[in-house]
Amino acid sequence: MLITQLKSKEAIEALAKGKTVIINCHGCKEVYFPEHEAEKLQKELSADGGVARIITTDYICNPDNLKLQLKKHMDAVEGADAVLVFSCGVGVQTVAGMFESKRVYSCCDTYPLPGFQGVTPLTVNCAQCGECYLNYTGGICPITACSKSLVNGQCGGSKNGMCEVDKNMECGWERIYRKLEKLNRLDVLNCAPKLRKYGNPDAE
Ligand code: SF4
Ligand code: SF4
Image (cartoon, rainbow, N blue to C red; front, top):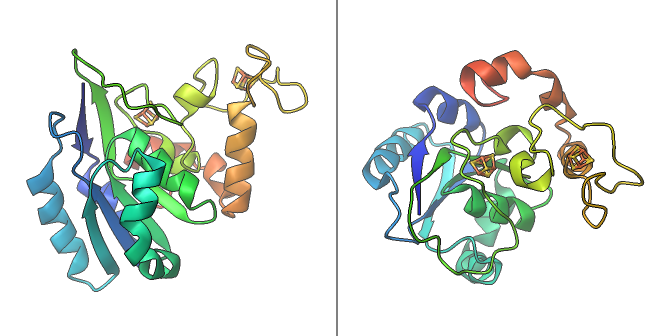
């Protein structure tokens, strides 16, 4: 089980710059999702005309389902500067994986709750760390993609792009670097104080 909580209003507002598309995931109904808070905030974000579309769907953690659900919204997503995802960390990573060249941001933090975790086979993982880092790692989770769960960069032990702890796994931080480079967001790696204060790289 897990619980998702909205990031602060100022953090989400700072992420919602330019033309945006919002994706809400209402899957996993046994898991708490702050539907009403999210809806209120999204109405406020829409008031200035920057939100091109709000998509509410379910099980975005399943890439095949996600592809199907987004089929009729592809024009809006492709035309957007950023995609804001309101879901657990697995959902955000799945969207970020589908849109490799698009800025995909997490608007929630994910916390663990004791209980059944489900049996859905996942291609990415969220360790429910309680402070989602995906907004400054290009949508790749440093907690689960790095063997040491480092949040401040590479340990320096990787060889030929592979992890020193698990030689069958690509170094998570090399993946993060390449992804940020592709997004033209290597600047994010230099904005630690802003990130600590606001939880996102684009706060003023
Ligand atoms: S940083 Fe990783 S573990 Fe933490 S909430 Fe985000 S996806 Fe989950
Ligand atoms: S080699 Fe890369 S993935 Fe492995 S522990 Fe070091 S930083 Fe993490």
